[in-house]
Image 1: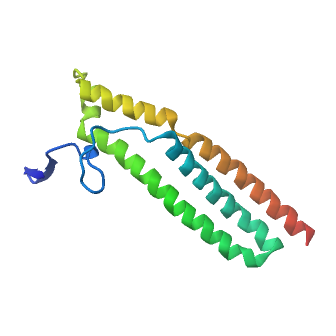
Image 2 (image 1 turned 90 degrees about the horizontal axis):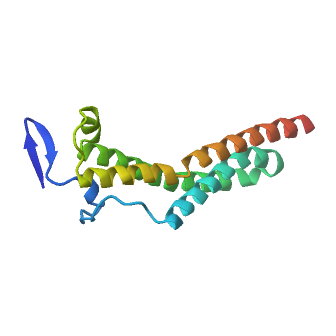
Image 3 (image 1 turned 90 degrees about the vertical axis):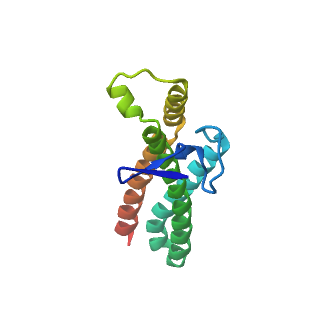
Length: 153
């Protein structure tokens, strides 16, 4: 159900209220903690796999390819999940015209407040910052391991 207006595509209903199959959800919502922690763990395993490749190159080269596939498959799923979260947030902002309403100091409706609460809670509960910190530390360790293992040869 889409309407066209002045050559621009307009949605009749906010698209965040629909999942991929087009079934209506009640409102944007925070995913359960087990989903957040599962994808965080998947991203962490992938990050470890990619950084471990440098070690396997030195110690057991036959493991490089399987570890690369593990990291790639994990990142594929992890970044697909992160993409959907980001699109959901951006769509909520767009569909409810939140930036325009805040810039113009417009009165926010209850639905606007619910979406803002979803957005702020989603950002606050995200493990994204911890993920970046862990990837940074793992990268430093991988470079260090490579330098040490190269020097030992």
